[in-house]
Length: 314
Image (cartoon, rainbow, N blue to C red; front, side, top):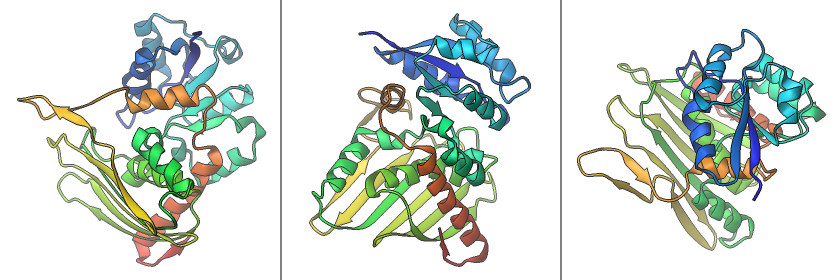
């Protein structure tokens, strides 16, 4: 089998303390039998992560491309961790191949709507991996096939380790988006109204969000999103669907094992990011800019609700 050649575009996330190209995407590509990294484009000069992109290329022993057209000609797909300026440059090059973008929602609602209207962004897909977990994919397929009958309610819980601490842009847009995208994969595009409660911990500043959503045409969705205190490594990530003809519970934190003497869980089978990249970089389905724009509008409404205590339509 010929491997799909991946161009790593940008290495954004410096201020937030994350390096998803190095720590998440490169290991997933290396674990795959059908993907390979062919080069690095650092983004526009002065962009977020510009300098460390060169370091990444050197560590991997692959070419660093300063000219984007040449970099794209050698690649079958792009995995991008970019800021707004580098995203503009990427679209100007009209890649006409899958472009998988990390943290796409952070571009903002108005910019996302611009992407929806931009034909050059037709191949852009969001790198939110929850929907690619086998359990979520199976639940989405069964729900859409009507195996559970008419859905009435869906409850989601996402509790992540402390990691690098609360995100500067808020945990709803950095963490909660993972749960929202998974719910959208099961129920379809969001439309309705949301009530939100936001609590900020006094000690570490971590956020807890409770969302209650009327997800038309008549499903009640509740989502709990929180970040653990420092030193608590375990997480919680599960969804329960209640429908007219049955119910289902999927647990994305299982199956896993814990090694004696450690508190680290290890998943069985291929990693979820590997499955995500193998699907998206080869033209498979995922969340488009339009899908993420709808979720961004929902998060806008949730933030407004958390401020005034009212229910907001989106």
